[in-house]
Image 1 (spheres, rainbow, N blue to C red):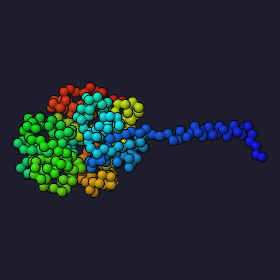
Image 2: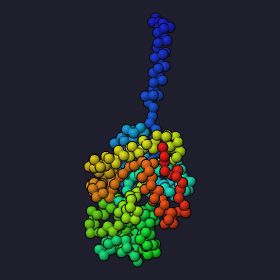
Image 3: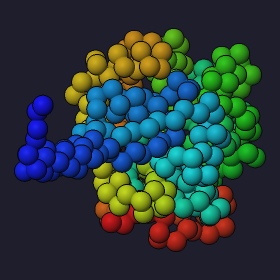
Length: 325
């Protein structure tokens, strides 16, 4: 009968203990960051689709958990209730959530206002000023409406009085203009590039980035990146990891546009070439800067100040709304 010495048993036991102790270190999971996404054919979910497909989350030390929602209201609600940790959304909408008690911390920028465009079919309508006494289809619940109203306020035009507003989401706004029920429609990318391809005779009478630059002298943001304060408390490195991963996505779309276009086609069912067209036109501009940098903080804060002056909110949020490492 085979016998094992006490010394051999001790060596075997020590090896077993060492092996068990090594397993957790090897199998240690990366922190999970839960993000609000959309099932709509917009570029918001494309950001997360590219990040996951190219492994930019793992490269930057975390695991992305993108949770899809069928409407913008549900998308924001998931963040507000803590079901998700992160979303990329309108800065002035995040301002509203913060004032309602949601622990919003804006950690970075996202997309510029260049993808906010207003179309008209009538060649006589060449600018927003030409819409006086006419109808504009726009989603009144979105930050795009707020940006447009702020711009018109600076021009002495009251959106809602001087220009009649027809409340409609982007797809319905486009349909209303197509049917000649309104004189102009506000849309964002990728619908803007789809419209230009299908209706080359329609006129762009307003571009959000150009308009904002005109009245402020600086850039504005269509969407910015926000994370909940409780998520940051659990993982203090999360803001910097996520900003780095988003920068990877932005660089990938710029340098590997054909592959990004293919991902957009496969995951969002966008027609081939639409993402390429949006990027080439400079309407879709993903620029990721840390929100805590002084210049970036100023551009975001300025948008909030103008939202207060326009009467959307009673007061400014305190400085904590913008994350500082």
